Length: 275
Image 1 (cartoon, rainbow, N blue to C red):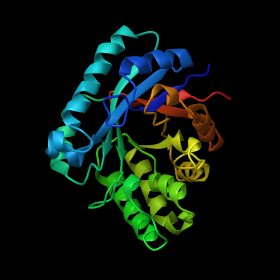
Image 2: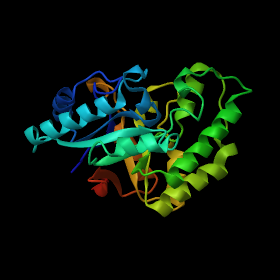
Image 3: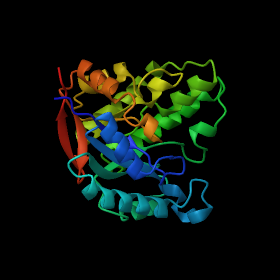
Image 4: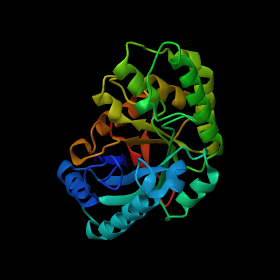
């Protein structure tokens, strides 16, 4: 039996989301998706800005996201499993604010991400040159390692996030082999802490043309003892819900995984991969 679960989905409760949780549920049923985890954005360092944040009021948004999921999960029971999560951005930048994010609800799933290194804008907004890319990537992977070592989360999101924009906007093709030692350290930390690595499928539909991370890095994670992978479309609307998830599952299979992971009550549940 082919069970498709999308563990990285944004609703209209994210500043950049377009579809309501109800619309996502209806789309999931139409597409044959068994389980959806709503992971609306929580940029923890922005909490203190409230309504003045360019990302909107994070606490209000996540509170509403959780409410929507709780109300609709019962209504859609038996048709689609709806889980409450959040994409927790930069959890170590301001720990006191991150603590407030955790206190909003009893989440099923915490997806940790780094969208910007300390004192820089989101990678989406940066201008890239051959001079600044190496230092930005070095800082990024170091922060990612710090997050893997010290943050409270379940899965580490889109490991190669900056590459999505570097490749999209420039002719620069960074050689990630230069960062292999620290990437290995990130993977070994995830293994030691029994945390998952996300296979983010959004890159399949962008100029980068690969999952984040790609097959080779997922294989390396497996070689180093990785046993938990989550697979998410990073969809921000119904059209993209589930996009690439089957391809992400196939990458996991090719790398030696016999199952992928969905989290309920912060506990990993294994979903068998069909062969």
